[in-house]
Amino acid sequence: MEEKKFDLNSIIGFALIFGIMVWIMFQNQPSEKELADKKAKQEQIDKEAKNQEVATKETAVVTITDSTVADAAQLAKLKGSLGNFAYSATLPSAKNDFTTIENDLLSLKIANKGGYIVDATVKNYEQFEKGSGSLVKIIKDNNASLNLKLQTQDNRSLDTKNLFFEPTLTKEGANQVLTMRLKSSASAFLEYRYVLKPNEYMLDFSVRTQGMNSVLNTSKPIDLEWNLKTYRNEKSVTYENRYAEIVFEYEDGKDDYTGQSGLSEENPSDVTYIAFKQHFFTSILLTDTPFASAKLTSENLVKDEEIDTVFTKNFKAVLPLAFKGGEVNYNMNWYYGPSDYRILNNYKRNLDEIIPLGWGIFGWINRYVFIPTYDFLSSFIGSFGIVIIVFTILVRLVMSPVTYKSYLSQAKMKVLRPEIAELGEKFKNDPMKKQQETMKLYNKAGVNPMAGCLPALMQIPVFYALFQFFPSAIDLRQKSFLWANDLSSFDAVINLPFYIPFYGNHVSLFPILASIAIFFYMKMTTGDQQMSAPQQEGMPDMGKIMKVMIYISPLMMLFFFNNYASGLSLYYFISNTITIGIMLVIKNYIVDEKKIHAQIQENKAKPKAEGKFQKKMREMMEQAEAQKAQQKGKK
Image 1 (cartoon, helix red, strand yellow):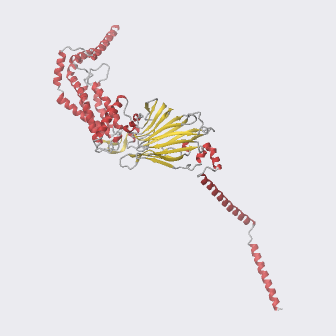
Image 2: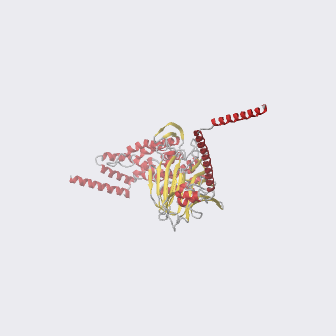
Image 3: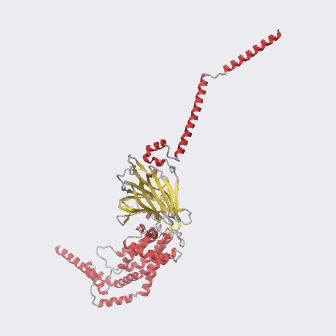
């Protein structure tokens, strides 16, 4: 009986425990809100997992597209914006990679995007100063671009600078050949072809199309746009900017240039080359097939020389590439290198005109006299400063006969000065008569009043040619002499803490020496020239003007040459110093004023035929006197 009671109690106990557990579970059951939140949370987790899976699949598709053009969906999407050129955007080359070609002189980096040169480094030349460690770069940091404006059959306007080209680098002998193709299909493309030869600054460059007549609108030419924002490479931004300009050849050998200041534009036709010239370096585009027209624009970027010190000019050229038979095919050349007369002249393509040696007789003197002489001297003289000094001595020795004749004429006029003064006093109320009598005196004495002017005029071509020669001589670049560390730039001996307009923020010594030399030279010569001709009625007093010029000319040189090449100032200093020495020798040891006076008196005693100049002057004065008398008679 007790055993049964135990079993019953056990059953009742288990039942109570089970009931309590059920009640606890029921009490802990989540509410409907909690169930909804939990469900939403799970759905979010599932959604994120699904998105991640989709993203992974899309990434896989892109990765596949980078290595094949088989993805039709991707191709269709790109066609919406690029048309037929979507094909090129799906190639493995459709990324911002570069290909470098280089030789011992030049290094060029060509980008897949745009297919043009994005870095042009000229080896063996340093930027700013010798020892700077930075090589000259004509192109860097997107300061240049080459673009073709493509018009397609489906009325799209595309810029090649925004499209991706496929590069292929090969070799033809020692030449490096880089082809950049912008493809519309496997067999249709626009191609840039670069060929760089050993030890050359000039490279072959061609633009051609193949199978593009069904893609491009061939009814009008493609516009080629070439832009270059020129980096400063020299110590003086002022001096460098003065020689930065666009030079071009057109109409079968003519050459011209754009303005150097402000904004200027030229529109030549039949253009065969265009040079974006800096001071000592230049970029040139040449073509075998002349461009029918060109729009050339030059903008000066140096508005304030204290602030604008990075860029000098902004050059732009727009050139039409004509279709022939539905295709474009132009064989051209690029030149990236120094503005060196010898190098450019050796190409025999009229590129020497890029160097500003002067026009007419000035250029002739530089090309056939000064450059060969300078090259000869520099071939065996190591110091370029000594070369300039020896060169200057030779020039002054060659010109010494002219200096002698000039001084001899001044000496003769000086001997006649007392008699001319007497005539002036005698006929002070009759200027015309004074002139007539003065000319008679010249004729009797055998003196030509123009003899002193002609030798001076003969020196002008030499003076101007040298003024053009020295700034163009790249040999002087970064060559030192005495205190000047760069004969192609200014020779600062004092740096100023402020900026003086038209002068700069430094003091150059060679211009000071040149100014002192020209002051004493003019002081010696001006006094004897003041009486070289009778004073003309109604004309300014040349004697007073020359006295003022004695002081103004050296001051102008001091300001003007402070930022110029120290080699040029060195030349003028040595030249004027030598001229002063030659004149002192002529005055003290060669020309004897007593002998000149005796010769003049002897000439006056002899009958002398009237010269053409004297006769012409006499006739002119007689006509003027007759007209004057006639006018008085009418009154």
